Length: 110
Image 1 (tube, rainbow, N blue to C red):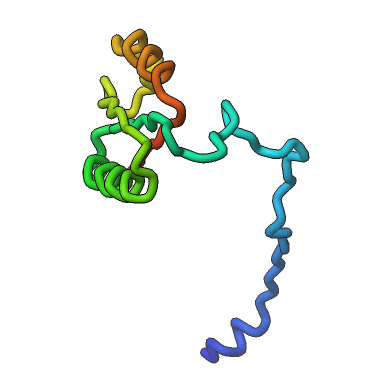
Image 2: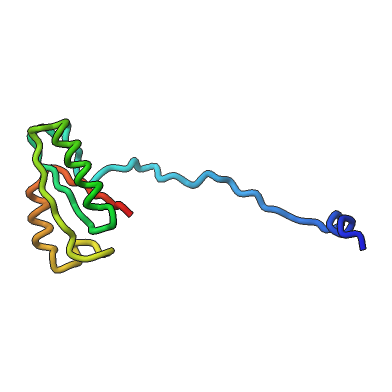
């Protein structure tokens, strides 16, 4: 049996799809506006307890304080894992912390 002849006699049909997705016409924006600069600002560092979370936030904190010596930081360790903090028993503490900082940095750090 000639395998090549059998393959050439088969027909295949393909559907070609566009790689472009529909785009949302509304531009993305943050929950609040970003501060113009970080001088004198209190920056929250949200620690989610992922493997490299503390390492990456510590590196960020060092770099931030070198570049902006008048900035300060405030760490917040999450209460649960893979659960929004607003759905944990730490909700009130989290809300108070968010209200006490000018910006927040979250490191996913997987």
